[in-house]
Length: 165
Image 1 (tube, rainbow, N blue to C red):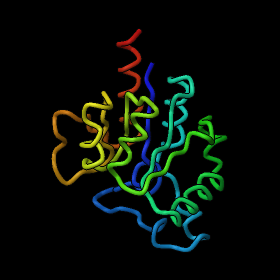
Image 2 (image 1 turned 90 degrees about the vertical axis):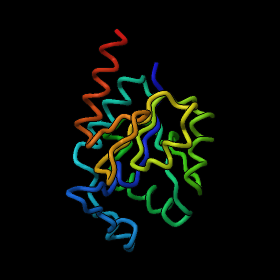
Image 3 (image 1 turned 180 degrees about the vertical axis):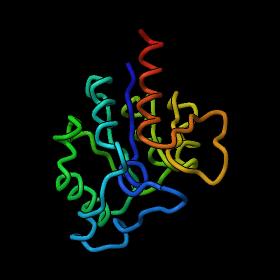
């Protein structure tokens, strides 16, 4: 059974599209941040992963206390928990990207979806499937699986579960 970690910034909120990142969530006040839309297909994609794993999916994000509060508010405002079926207690924050490895070990993650190669580098030897999300400036290394968007994540997941059946 897979256990999945999912980054939030530039994966669920504000992905890079056509070479441009939507940074309005980070560089804005509360009201404007709440208007930042989710990535296309993110909620359906997360709901699919939650269902496929029997609820073994977590959000794992690196950010400071201010962005943590804004993120919690955004998730509530957009009814993320209701729309995805993810348990609200499955939210983990850390203050440094390498610390995502601590969460990965504790949660026994088998999959991590993140837009940052440096995060996935810290997960080598810990997490079996490292999905490098979104548009990247360089080709993905062979030890990652590039996933351009949430449709690609869902295709990957369907292949994984089909091969496991």
